[in-house]
Image (cartoon, rainbow, N blue to C red; front, side, top):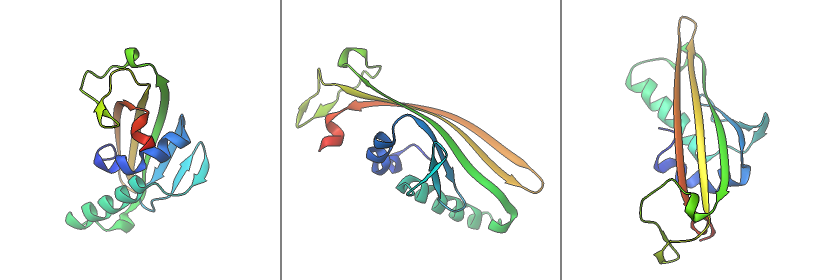
Length: 137
């Protein structure tokens, strides 16, 4: 849920934050980057809203949750075109991108959902590349 179309609105902020550790409290939407509070990302707000909808859908009182967090180790690199891993056709500034610098983004996510009785943990890895020009538009 964290990395899909909802991430798109947060991508410029993620690039500005750079490499580091993003922590999101899914119960409140509060976010921290490298331990310091930051303005909530739109994707954190979406995560909180999704959790609330999911709890309501399954008749689970929010008060039963003690913790609902996501920790994301973010890594950003600026790479030359010939070092990209993606093989898809990319478009930048109205034409096919063939030699532009690229952003490489990697995320290692760990989630924790905890009640008084049980803990649920999850892990997920995600990687993406895009032309630098995409964020300049």
